[in-house]
Structures are given as structure tokens and as C-alpha cells.
Amino acid sequence: MAVVDLPAPGPGSGAVPDPAGPVAVGGFSLHVFDAGLACCAVEVSAALRCAELLAGPGQGADLGGSAGPDLGTEPTGGAGPGEDADPRDGSAAGNGSAPGDVPPPVSVLVVAGTVTDKLAPLVLAAYRDLPEPRRVLSFGACSNSGGPYWDSYCVTKGTDQIIPVDVYVPGCPPRPEALVHGLRLLRDECGEQR
Amino acid sequence: MSEMEPRGAGSGLDAGELPPRSRGVIGLLEENCTVCMLCARECPDWCIYIESHKQTVPAPDGGRPQVRNVLDRFAIDFSLCMYCGICVEVCPYDALFWSPEFGYPETGIGALTHERDRLRDWMWTVPPPPAHDAGAPLPREAQAAGPGAGPADESG
Amino acid sequence: MTPGETLAEAARQLPAAQCVIETGTGAAETITMDVPRHDWLAALAFARDTADCDFFDWLTAVDELDQGFTVVAHLYSIESRQHMLVRTLVPREDPVLPTATGLFRGAGWAERETHEMFGVVFDGHPGLAPLLLPEGFEGYPLRKDFPLAARAAQEWPGAREPGERQASQRSRRRLVPPGVPEGWPPP
Image 1 (cartoon, rainbow over the protein chains, first blue to last red):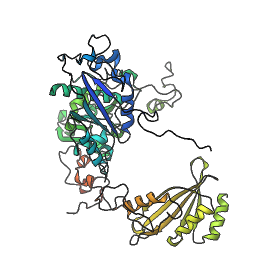
Image 2: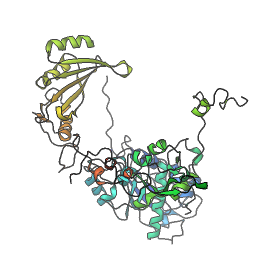
Image 3: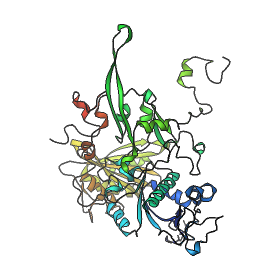
Image 4: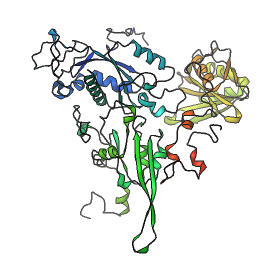
């Protein structure tokens, strides 16, 4: 067998996809960090890679009027096709925000998969490294409460045992579309707190 | 947000697009439940909580009064549920059904334990059972009824 | 070497070994060799050198209760596509076995995991530290007398009889959910 030189994985090398960029959900720009620990990671990856899914039908109508993102390219200010707002002047269009009132991007840590006792300190460290404002979305049964491994000797019974969780998405694993529902609930919660 | 609104819709995914027997959520048809507790015992996650009491039903015309179980509480903790379907399969009275609804995230983990009123609401989203595969053996009811009683033989 | 030839050679080199050929799915034959503890390294060396099983797949243990622990190694010959299971029994009071890392470097992590899960000590292992369990974990979790604490602490919803509000007081057997030994936790 011939020896093949494989490309070294890393951001921008083309061997590994770049991390998911800003996602526009109803005027808020969410930076989604996927802590893909187990099987649920596959569903989250499927959701975050599919711009069409995040945009929804009619180019973002279901996400509160914001344009669906072309992941990782331009920063989102809430302006979509067909709207007159120019994102360069810093106005957040759609949802009735005042001009110039651009909400800071919200960092969302999506914990997808089983959190074992050995890995728990790393999840805590990832949460601590998130810039404010930050939210946590728990994706899947294992992350919500330990799930099918609730009785195991080495599984943390839910991410909320170590970090505060804002939204819980049930499922084993939840559909990628369920992540969209969870992000929408997070949007509503962010909107209420402003 | 209306509780009756099927939240699976509107995400760019119609319920009709989901494959048959999709496992989204479990619905409870309370009328069929006899509180046999099989689902609670067989659930590997221990996520079904059932409370009940016995009620004596007087029989008409001086017959012997019967004792039956009355369901007080039937809750499924969907934060624990792993959607294995053991409860649906083991129920001898067909009180539990699969529904493809999947959009029910919550902001608090306690809110993921759904009581029987919400489980009943999900019953209305349960699709009709899919048709049998071509070439599959007839269901037992048709076999027991004898030849000529199968669905393919309407004139028999 | 055909499986039959391997068995003949094993009978010659390792007279204390007991070998069985089993046909699994897809007509893949597995040779299962049971050896006494003192022949453990010799059996692994035989598998690697004589039977051409140069691929080390996994090594683990089975808790046989009073008899001790069965340590099992799965080896594979890429050339002849021959599976081999090499097994030995170590007593419970003295679960010590020489390390296989001298023959197969890949056995390093497998022996670490077997040590932390069952308590089997591998003499001569370069670093028998825990691999998967968090620091400060006490006990050997995959032993059969290690109960699942969460099951004993949580009330089993199935402990109730139909028509009763609380766990049944009459049939005490039903109060113990599956997976929890009788009489645990100790009063």
C-alpha cells in the first residue's frame, strides 16, 4: 500500500469544517459553540451546517425576519433580502429595535452528548471561557439529566449539575429541527431579558 | 403560544415529510389505560410516574361490585426519556402511541415532565398507522378470521 | 495455518491449553484457547508467532464471582483472517497477571482499563494508572458486587402496585428494582 500524505486537520485547512459562524435568530446574533460530546453532536452538526434549515422557508421568515446566514461569512445585523436596512450602519432591522441598537452577539454553548465525570471540568472550563452575554442550551437526554445513563457510575446527571442551563431540548437524539426550536426559544428568552 | 398548536410544523418541516413511525413524543390515551403499571416497570430510565387508587363500582341489579383502578397521575419525564419505545410496545391495552411531534423545548428541566393532559393533547397528532409492507404476512386478526378475510380479498 | 493445524501445534507447545473452534456469523471461525495463569504469556506468544495473530484487538475481564476473573484477549491474524480468543482465569483473592505489553504494545491502555474497572493487577506494566475514571473514584465499577448507587437512591416508579398511591408495603420483593442487589443499601 502506498503511503498517502493526509492534510493536517485544523481551521482553514479544508480537512475540518470551520466552526459555525454567527447565526441570526430574530435580530440577535448567536455565536453557537457546539460541545459535541457524543451522538447528539451529529444532529447539531447537521443543523448548524444546513443554512437552509436555519433560514427556514421564505428566507428567514420563521426566525423573526432575519436573513438566514451564510455560515461564517458576513456578520449578521438582522437585515434580510428585500429589506432596506443597510447592515453597515449598525442598525438592527426587523423586530422593531431602535436604529443603532445592535445587541451584542450572544455566545451559546450547545452541550450535545453525555457529560462524563471525567469530562465535566472541561465543560465547566468551556463555559467559563465564553464571553458575556452567554447562554447554555442542553441538547438531548444525556445532557439534560444523564438520560439513558442516569444510573451509571461515571456520568454527570445533567449539564445543569455544573453550569446553569437556559434551554433544554429533549430527545435521544433530538432532530436537527429541534435545535432550531430550541434556538428560537432562546431568542424569545433573550428578547424578554432586554 | 397556543398549547394545541403542533410545534413540529413551521420549522420548514411538515409532519407529512417525516417518515412513518417517527419517534417524536409519546401520547397517552387515558381511556385505554387500566393502570397495569407495566410501562412504569419496564421503562429502563424509570421516567414514567403513575399514581392511582382503587374504586369500587357498584354493579347494577344487585350484582357483585367490581373494583377498578382509577388513574390519578400519569407523567413522563422527557428529560430522561430515551425514546426506546419499550413502554409503547409493552402496553397490553394500546394506551401509548408514538407521535412525530418534536418541537417542545423548555427553559426549566422540571417543565420537561409532562402530565396526562399534555400527553392527551399529543394524541391528536398521532398519525394513522402506515400500511403494511408489500408481501408482509397478514396481521393475526385477519389470519384468525380464516381465508378470504384478508384486506386483499374484499369480495370474499 | 488452518485452525486444525493451529490446534495441533497448540497441543504440542502448550499441553495445558484447552482449545475450541467456534463458527461465528459469516462462517468466521474463532479459536478459543483457555490456558492456566502460568501459561498466559506463552499462549499470547504462541498466538502471535505460531498462529500469525499479529493484530491485538482488545483485552478485558469477566467477573466470574467466586471463581475469580476471566481475562480475555482477542487477537487476529490479518494474513489468514483467523480470530483467536485467549482466556485465563485469575483467582479473586489474588488477581495478578503478567502484562502483555511486552508482546503487544497495544495492550497498554486495555490493561489500564481492565485494572481500573476490575482490579486485576498486571505485573510489569509501565504505568498502571486509571484511564477513564475520574480522579478520586473508589471501587472497581465493573465488578458484579459494585451496585449502581443511583438505582438504590431513587424510588422506583414500578414499585407501586396498581391502584396504590405509594410503594407497596406488602410484597417486599417488589421494592427492589432490577439491578439492585437484595439488601442494598445496608441499613
